[in-house]
Length: 471
Image (cartoon, rainbow, N blue to C red):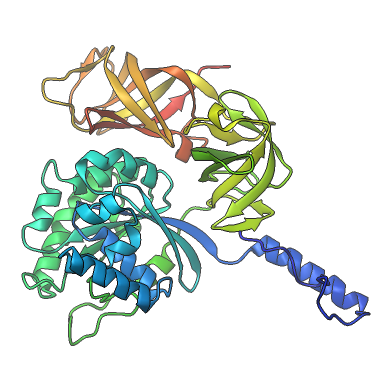
């Protein structure tokens, strides 16, 4: 949590301060500083932008940063010129999010871009996830850190259909987002300004009516957890302020910033056992790990374990959004400098964890899986191999035994013994991995207990860990 060094009520060297201060005033200011630490600014949320390639995710993200004052006009002009030089006029907003040359040349986001902005009540970190098919694993690492998702859909004729049909990214991203724990979704219908759309209510309603049953089947409660709204990412319409009635007479709902502000997400436990899955690491005056705190809090000087290899480490420094802080709580994206471990002894997928209650490290677990779509001619049975994605872990796994099939209607286990299952089935099975991985039971820590299985670049199943072997 972003705590600056507490300046309140502390005399800074080199500052002209009155010599004697009333003791009560100092005590009061101390209490204020303490309180600031407690309540600590605005709430912090990670937003992931998902959707089909070219739906306008980077452009919308860029426009948000521009509208919230994170990027100045001069930078925009520079990007506009660069985009023109590459004869890509409409891409200049996306340049804010797409920072590397490959992305700009192709106009596709590869890495998960990162940027920050604030609204009235909330600090946001934008994770701009790639939409292109071959980049879905990056989308997984983005969504696994997100609290809320903004699903960007293109209203342009033909583009919505491409993203939504089988094989389009819109479907896969929604299913992934749900599994990876993105509980709330804003469905942003973009490119409403396009000549083929022209802010047409019919087109907007058509998209909403087609998406609703699909969102339901992916496990979203559409009334409670999903909100639709129209925007133009390129022009910035209905983003920071509500769209003008002269442009769109029928829209009476909120604009994007208002909708983001009002989203309620479940609170995580700052006093729970500490858990931070490591997504990246580097050397910088010691070993620095990056990740998002899923539970508990961390302070400078804490002793922690790096699991699964049980290395005891000490926290030397904690950084949150560029600024150094003393302590940080759940939901924050952190860089933590550690002593007692070498950078090469850490892999992404390892978890920084409390010593008193460390995260379980296992090579096998029981899980409930929902089969989405197997590859053609594939049969899901014992011996099936796939790639397991759970928080920041990517490991090859094998299904060693199918235990029981669940009846989707009654949600109760079926009586008959199950040897294989087909698309759409829900099955409880035992999953084995070669290397020890850190997972939790879904019922204890949802964000560390849900996973996806992928084969040949396609998500074939989503699941949750239901049981772990007794240590």
